[in-house]
Image (cartoon, rainbow, N blue to C red; front, top):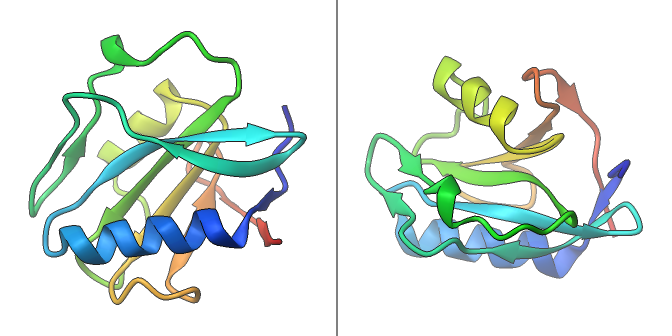
Amino acid sequence: MKVYAIKRQTLKMALEVAKDNYPKEFAAMLRARDGVIIELLFIPGSIGSDRSAMIPFYMKPVDFSIVGVIHSHPSPNTTPSQADIALFGRSGDVHIILGYPYTEYSWAAYDRMGNPIKLKII
């Protein structure tokens, strides 16, 4: 599924979750329909700390609408680390990193290789 947009309310929810968890990172899966990210899917057993967030992929449901992962960084840096890129390769084609201070302007999207991609907010 080609993803080209994210619903504004889904992005706002993710930014609020990031703010609530700060300074710890959080991670969730992204669910899309018709090329639009519509929902965050929180996997039971996910763990966030001030250095990383982990998702237990063995708990991920078989769900072909899951297109990637979203997670927060406790700094303004939204550039993916090597660990982020390794995560991207295991979990879909669209990945979002939210950076502090978690506003509509402090996030970036990437493909599974860590290359920046554009997502429209709709």
